[in-house]
Length: 181
Image 1 (tube, one colour):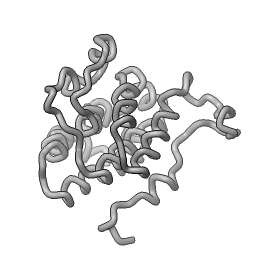
Image 2 (cartoon, rainbow, N blue to C red):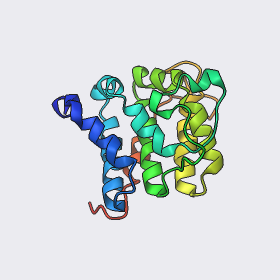
Image 3 (tube, rainbow, N blue to C red):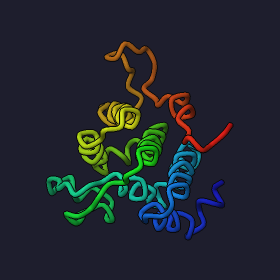
């Protein structure tokens, strides 16, 4: 898998297709593939180096403006978007991208990267906009990870007793309708 991701054209080709109005099946396939890549913790550092964050965030972003300090922390491709910028229209794609971001929280490097690049502010605005209940639930899960003050903090506030980590079963059970297992 490292060989696939380290290929210079791999992430770039995903950027091209996830942001176009390509057919639904292709866009969903790309989003699910990105989510699956993010589930492999051994490649988180490489994905971060390949700027996967802008690939995941850009389709989730609308025309909102952020405070200067937060805007400058976003990936370059996600800064100062046009007022006509629209979010991805398909809830399954938005949900897969949000889940991919949640999966990056499995590693301290991934979690720190999301925290230091103002992902919370983008996700907060997406949550206000989102109408799909299952996507909204995925967003709320991600927000829970982003609001933790220190990686690995014990989750006792929510009645938990373990380390705060994303739920694998929640993400695995949310396959697109056209995938048969």
